[in-house]
Image (cartoon, rainbow, N blue to C red; front, side):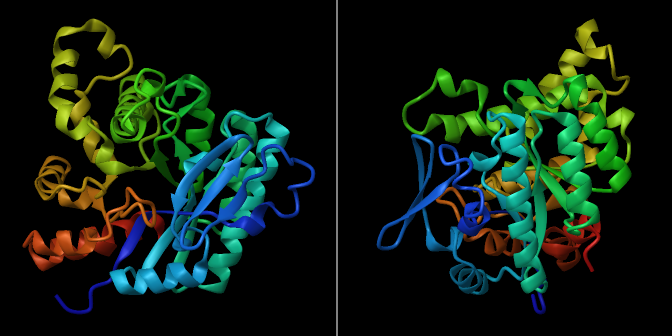
Length: 332
């Protein structure tokens, strides 16, 4: 294929400068970058996360790596470790604002390469709405990144309805990324909280939204789900079976759960080519968007090549690599 345009909807960034002005005020929880020779770690309180490559915190390295991998345009979003849902709201508000301002500055400096997704303090829905409005209307960000759960409240909880209503009004894309998975206390070894816990938590979050009727109540809500939707596309038949035989599944919805797969978009971070083929066939190519999880160790640096090598019609490949996401986000 020639003249391929690419838009990576799933990439994370850490901006040390975002915390420099408030690190004294919130010295305990303000993230700090700890650099080594070729990798870095993020320290938040007593916790250390990583390692992360230079492209995670250096725009120069990021741009160079994007060029090598054929990524033309990226959505910048914070790492889930800096959602800060666990903090008191005043502190969480400042951390969200500072990160959003920093992402906005990068987008303004490199508009041909980046767009921004906002972080919001979703432990307080009204404050999250205020920051989403500021990010969309004043900073011109294209959407919001939120976690699969907020202090163990999943996204189908009615408490989040005002947030989804406002997102629908703002025409803002909601990118759902796993955080603090419910299984993490039970599976602590072998990196299982990430390998299994993250897709499990995504499945729980989206299933809770479906069965609570979120997609019926907010029919224009734009939702994109990380990691190919977790286990949901693969196990949607199980949810449909439950809908047929259990009355409690019908309390808020009249359609089977599989009906709502067409109401969401799913990124391509599934690693396995067979799984990618299945995802496209299950939800439809118009509902799949390029994602790489750039530049983390769980990212897929070969995702663009994998999509091209599927041998799909050029028109479908272009949709997945760029056009679907550009339409969702209003990017020309």
